Length: 203
Length: 203
Image 1: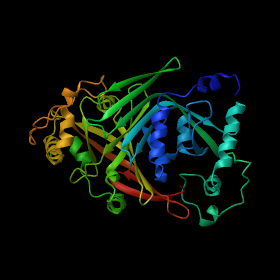
Image 2: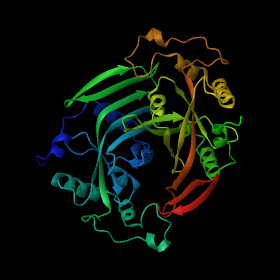
Image 3: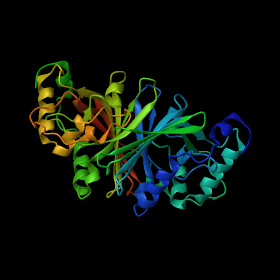
Image 4: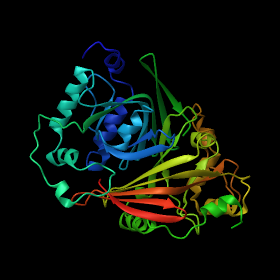
């Protein structure tokens, strides 16, 4: 990873909340939708936006969550004005919720940092072909195009299109609520100077 | 319902998106968590917030979604600055997502409209005793209190405490994405002068 300000601010040792989150992912692994979380951002007009995205793991040697998104989507547009996000991740089997808040980074083809454009390429290679197809569909949110616009294409697994972006969320606070506690347990993690402070809160 | 501006703006005939949403609730009814959705709001500092809440039905003769919340919670504080919300509601069995965006209204004990404070009372009566107990717990988000603060109390089902609030979300746009389509189907609903315009969009 290069020495630029961005990568320095991302690079970190394993945060204290990574272990309970890994445990939740493991214990809910029988449900494919356990890898889906809801991502809140803020539109340029100040209103909130909220949608489901798929967790694609963590950027190596950081605590940044990865998802993939389309350059043409509203959330990439939103990111140009306000680059904050909050993830809400509810696990149905173990009945626990993680809220992860922090800065949102969108990595497109021309992002000026090699380590991150390489992560973009690696993530593209790991996608299913069905997911890759979606980046060749017509403009999201525009009036529905004809079926022929959605036809399956031959896609190079080593060459992501310009529409393909990596989304990175680098949390600075994490709130973990366990509904099964008696009463519920709530643990709060705050990053202060690259250290994580942990506290138990009232639910 | 009274003639005030608020109730007039809430009162409405059944919106076009109510039928597909009812169908989703029905087809996913075997999973209790199908009644949970993620609610995004905006903090006073402009950052997004996102948490899971429980759907408590619709306010009669309106298209406003009901949830319950604590007067002391962050989302009630947020609501004093920006009163917009977006719900993201993902149904795991049928693999479809509804995004509902609109104004958020918090109805506390002293809200100046009888019809809405009556709805607050009705909702309180319909809660389980376990849920009612939570409104007598110590201040949410404060350092964890002793176990004795969480002891079960005798609660009057006709007398909600001042901490108990109704949250109402009155959507002005609804986006319905069906992942099972080939390709996915996306239907968009926009309210224009109390009419709902429906369009098919690219997913």
